[in-house]
Image (cartoon, rainbow, N blue to C red; front, side, top):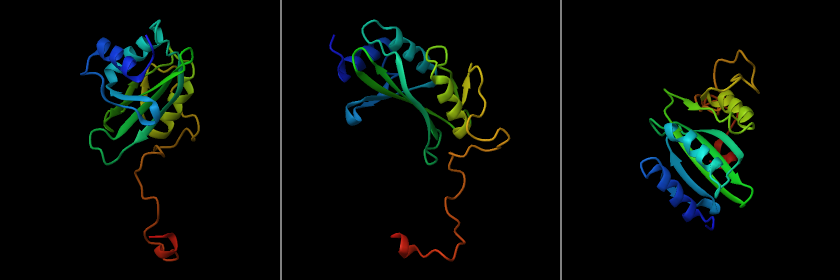
Length: 168
């Protein structure tokens, strides 16, 4: 089988069904789709272990915050790569800010350890089963997660800043 975006997506949907894989599109030629928290670990294990696909490299895993999307404020994005076939794909899982919990991938990818710690540190997403889920870049006693857009980026009371100088 030739590894094209359509063939790989068809194989994934055949294995997991359309109720667990949706909104597929190809920005920049990379197969991108959404799944749910319950499916992400079995899906990535399938991609890793499948003899045809061999998606065995975790390129990137990070958090994203969408404060305007009620019920789906947080996103965990995985970018995976089959080095043998030079095929890439991106998987997104959306979470509510009230339940920011994901399963860990540390048993599958050693690199997930630091990526999950960084995502926890900046977004507060908890990775169940992680061997050492502690802050990695911020001080340990920090009580908030800095990448969550919970505060204004600028001080609205500043008088020394004229908007026309900044193209507004």
